[in-house]
Image (cartoon, rainbow, N blue to C red):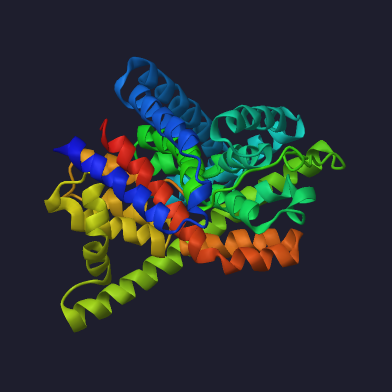
Length: 392
């Protein structure tokens, strides 16, 4: 029954993407099929094999060690405060972002990351049928983040037509930056985080190939990566540390605001309609949860968490998932995969602002297709969760 539902879920995802396609005749079905097969193979290896268990265990262990190093700095600055239960989330989940951001800066400065990202992107471009720029951008987004990635290709931003710009922005919204992966692993199962990271990379190309199909000519298929070399090492390090701190504080501020607002709206709905706002959204998203392979009796609870991610952000949704007691282990795993992406309304403003800072006209274009970005990125999450449901 689970397999049958998952197959129906795949059909639903592809039909929803096909309905929004800007050029159905240009869809390259062969590339889509190859990437879908790769998704299934990678999901099987990661979830159901000893090799996948070893890889995920190693990945999680690395982040666990890095977070332990981060806690040394946090403990030095905040002392006993960092051990208090009431502030545990801020210090144990958000503050390590500062240290991870510093490490990313060092890898960027030494040109290790640009080299790795560029050549992984080139290999991916052979598989997905898209340009080198799109492939580079997808890999870079998964490491640098949805704002920083555009700086690395700023020379080409102003020259891109709307359809290629959409693909770049959709990739940035469908992935998550490596600086906050450690934070996710503190909130949900590390296996689900790794599975989502891998599946979303290919899922972003699959959905973009349906919603926004096009061909890149040989003349257009160029890649110019901007690497900052003017700064000294310590200037760079200070900048990345402050960037990480800003991300941590911004996420914390958004959590305060969104959790409080959702609590207020839930209270209003409960007093007026006898049902909370999140429960109402749960009924709206329940059909999608069902086709993802989630049992009927758990679809409303799962749908509520999925909707929370869309209207607030993934951190708020992960907090709600952690508090949930009525969901089975399999459902928690599938929903966890769905949550690992930047597909929410606030991301549209972040991405549009990042592009506008580099090229004002292009930033306005991004803002105009904001809803389409959320639609496509949400389908990527839905696809990844559905594929993972075959193996959890």
